[in-house]
Image (cartoon, rainbow, N blue to C red; front, side, top):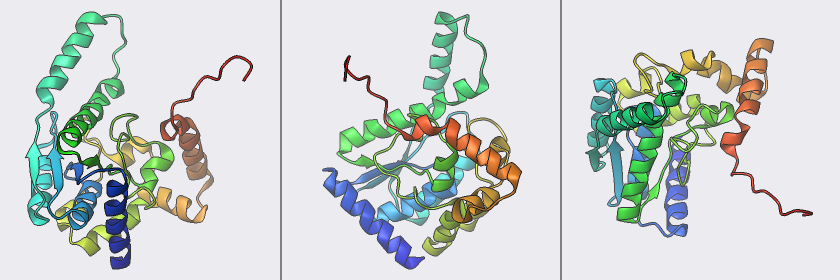
Amino acid sequence: MERLAEHLTDWIAAEVAAAGGSGAVFGLSGGIDSAVVAALAKRAFPHHTLGVIMPCHSDPQDAEDAAIVAHHFDVPACTVDLAPVYDLLLEQLAVTSTDLPDSRLATANLKPRLRMTTLYAYANQLDYRVLGTGNRSELAVGYFTKYGDGGADFLPLGSLVKGEVRDLARELGVPERVVTKPPSAGLWADQTDEAEMGLTYEELDAYLLTSEASPAVKAKVDAMHAASEHKRALPRIAPKPGA
């Protein structure tokens, strides 16, 4: 795992530099993925990192855990409360689009999209590049918001399944309370990744690593992968007539 940590640290430094960036900015959610990215970014850019804590009607423990991670790894961090902007946007949508059906997922997805906007605001101001926190397990089944937490310049954890991220977290010294907390995107109260996906990370990871799983798990993962293909691709470009 230390070799993996060194590899990812070097990769972050090289990719950010190649893209003309002078440092890295990332969201600090209080979860394990963002904690690992924070630790790696600090290694890659000891003096040019920024973690952004972005509560939006969130569980207060998430912000507390994010602050603990920032302090633990000596990562400069700031907090931007997105709740007022989120509430105003919902208000405006309700006023101008009264015929839209109520959708908890649609309104919840505004939160990661506001976080993406905030991260890029800092990236533009500081000449940093945005590090995403998505892992292979989430990417495979599309468990991320398009142009939200899926909007980043680089994905350091994109080739690691959730279990590998957890192992790396322990190697890096991520606080145990963060390592063991139930994974959640924090989209609504008591929301967890596994409950929303309808399968455990252990089942998903095993299928991705070995191609073996129960028929039910295979069918579910394959269906989620196919349905989310558009999230992993660049926008399609219409060809000219006759092309």
